[in-house]
Image (tube, rainbow, N blue to C red; front, side, top):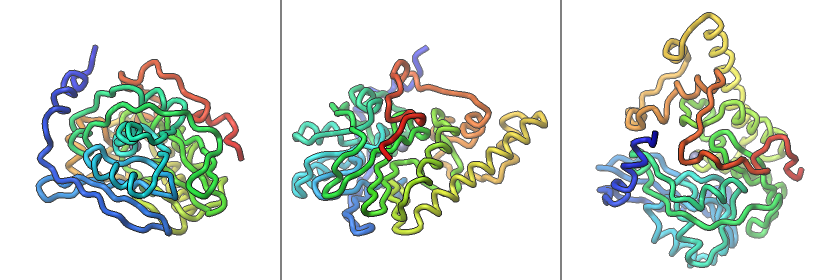
Length: 309
Ligand SMILES: [Zn+2]
């Protein structure tokens, strides 16, 4: 059965959002970072960064700041965009930048997802706005990132197509949404717990200190932050498995975890973002979004393949 949001997406796509959109330039670890967020009735929602390195953008930001982002890219001499994954706050302007003649690169799987007109849920319209489809090229294992060379690191878990960019010469790791927080509290419905932990373990084999997360960048001690998240996830996994072994169901397990989600916004996701999703993933449940069915995993997302290191 087609989910309701597939029917409602064209409607929400046409309704102008009564929200202000922020795009501000900051400097993080010596890089130009563009911070973007929507402001609804004076309240700032989840902000996201994309990074400009020489002629390259890492991620493309929110679709609701399209004009300003494209103007920035043209003014700054940006020629290509590397996209970590297909979510609207990362690939949001890939289509607009491609139309301006920029090269857009992402993982094998990402190229297939970005080429689609993806239906999104109401909360995604509220937070970010709808991204247009984008033609993209599959990333090689190593690629120029401005003046530096970056290694493309498989980083599935948060999203099936996610990759990270490791710059050995600078000790920098661009992680998309593979980090976000040390004590992660919620999962989207299609996030994969085991793959997320495997991605963090992979990051811990790399020599970096600067963690260029798209939401909470860290100019130093990036390794320690990744290790703290890995340890937290292992702790939660242990608690969930103990409680399940004693016969607890998902609601009881959620209630007994040391996690309290006070953000009322999660209710607006109608279960698409929740602690219960994380518990279900630990217990082995797998969920594929209907709009992504049939898209095979590409080589860059397979943890078993070498990543050029
Ligand atoms: Zn994401």
